[in-house]
Length: 366
Image (cartoon, rainbow, N blue to C red; front, top):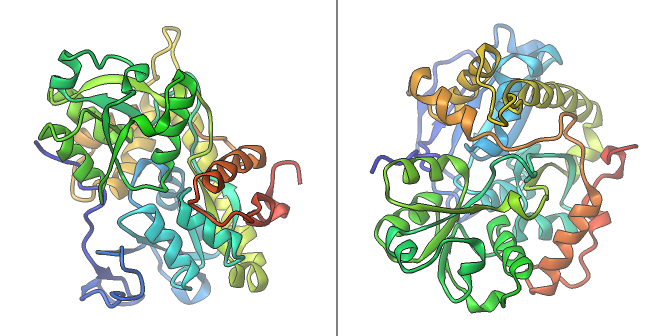
């Protein structure tokens, strides 16, 4: 099977005024989960000295599409920002990079790592990433063909089954717990198989090492189309919650608030474009794929699948778009619910307070 290598990235260094040069990553020991990184100059800089440099830690996946679209359309450059995106292999690594001072901002999924860093005051959430929303495909549970033949046909059938996911303390861990609660079975009846990457989760399904898995839409599409998995259900069928946030380091918030405001203007322009291009439905309830959608999908595909042409990336991106608030507004009530679950399961400190994890100046309505 051909995997979308979203997490497997090469290490490069982009230097203003020079061509990109390959070099060996020097971060071993500081961020243990960082296996590779890619620094992208998102603005086509002709006069970098006139712009303010900002480094964003992120992951190369569809949940960050609004950032990629804003970068591709030059919105950060419009605000006088020279954007560098450093892509990490998973969400915790991106959050760790921000906490360690390797970036000014991070757009990444919620995780025990991100919540712990936010609870300690090292980072704070300032805007929303994508979210689950009824009527829109998001993270999906799939079954192996063998498990499907044995009766694993719906989310309620996950009781007592082995399920692969990309790490304990991840948003996928949280979603599996909500599935169990919603369907009335004990969460600990499932045998969770935490694996180091989405590729590894997909491979576990292919090899039949688990009964089921929960994965982002980009990975699910190919597994289903190749017949190597069967659909069980989307999480969005039963719940709506934020998948992550744009975080800023405490140092950035203390010393560079003007930069943060400019960044948010550009990021929210990307979010608005993303929504109007990729989240429209036709009269039959299917995603509307027209010229506007194809143009946005092609721009996003440049970041998700470097080296691949638009003919192969546009269908994948346009059909795998998560729901997102057009203004990237944070939902504090939802963050509180997620933090409460992480505390209850011993994944973050019991005294962690959701309100301290957010810079309240950026919460919706303020």
